Amino acid sequence: MPLILVIDDDPQIREVLKKLLETSGYDVVAAADGGEGVKLFYEKSPDLIITDIIMPEKEGIEIIRDLKKKNPEIKIIAMSGGGKYVDSDMCLTVAKKLGAKYVFSKPVKKKELIEAIRELLS
Image 1 (cartoon, rainbow, N blue to C red):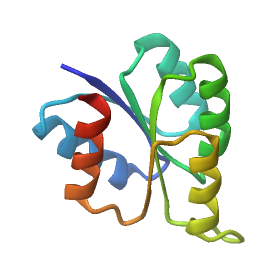
Image 2: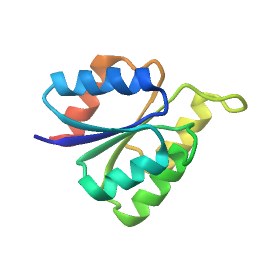
Image 3: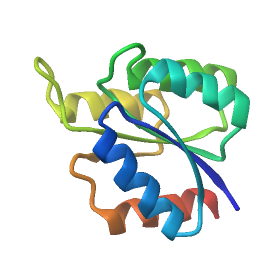
Image 4: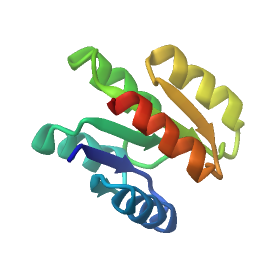
């Protein structure tokens, strides 16, 4: 079964994504911030990463940039609800330019997310 790493600082979003992905047939590991997410990436070698953009410790933009440098083939989906000073469109545009294959504004539509995951993992 493919392994997906979910990185999001919002515990409710993390839990909803984890349940959705598990019921869709994926193994899931989850991280509460970017630092923990990068650590899990190296420990678990996931097939796909789903990351929030604005988080404490290490933001999603940094995660995408750093992991793409180390492993250009890693598949990444980015999502954002924006932040205090930046809207989600700006965050997601940068994420896409750095190598995220798909980007989604929060709240993410479950069907669209699952379709993107299936395409990336096929």
